[in-house]
Length: 101
Image (cartoon, rainbow, N blue to C red):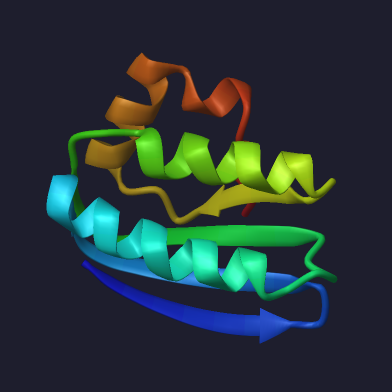
């Protein structure tokens, strides 16, 4: 899993690509948590899922949602591939984390 960060004022866009399996999610979680913890002015984070080819867990998304909510910040999703969308729909991710265009 690859993770790229693009900062835009009080928003950080996180471009994710590759397989979000147990190993990849652990790597991404550590990198994203570091950015969250070191950006006290953060108000929103956008996960760009365009490059994600596989996902077997929603823990990365829901865990970051909870961290950001505790900071009064929001998490948004964009470019969700069809196979990832199926997992998010089945697990109820969209009840907490909206998709933006």
